[in-house]
Length: 212
Image 1 (cartoon, rainbow, N blue to C red):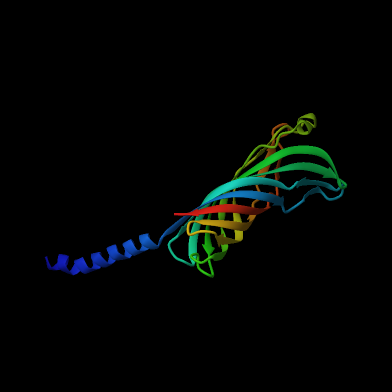
Image 2: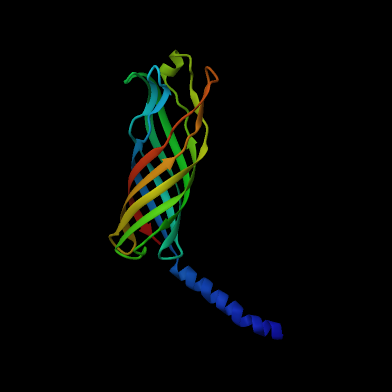
């Protein structure tokens, strides 16, 4: 009985702490639209000037941000980003690669230097993303005997900066930039040749955010 009596204040303190944390916790759901810029041109043959590059594209996404502290939050979510690529020779595109879809599923921590409860909430973030890719398909690839290119999913790393402007107590508008570093490998179905693809990506997004 004495041990139970001694433990009672400790249990009460733990329960009170959990209750306070639950009351302080904020959850935010954000829907995104993105402009996407592949940040690198990949040189396959320096002597001939053969390169692979991807055009600017677009996409969308959804994220959930959990705030247990006013300065720190954890974000999970996923995006779909599409860009169209080609093979160039001496500055001219000679072969269409088709569209490459990137599907980063991300987990990151964000720092809110002004606190996340104010009218303006700038933030910095960093984390990782498991990135899934579509196959590259085009008539040019088939005619060249290369066939479709299977791009393997891979772990990437990302940095994040943005600002949320509160419109009401539960609704904000958000501007956000992300830089994803990832280098998957692609295997051509027609030749079996495997090459690394530099798929580093800058995504500039605008979002509508709801707080619960």
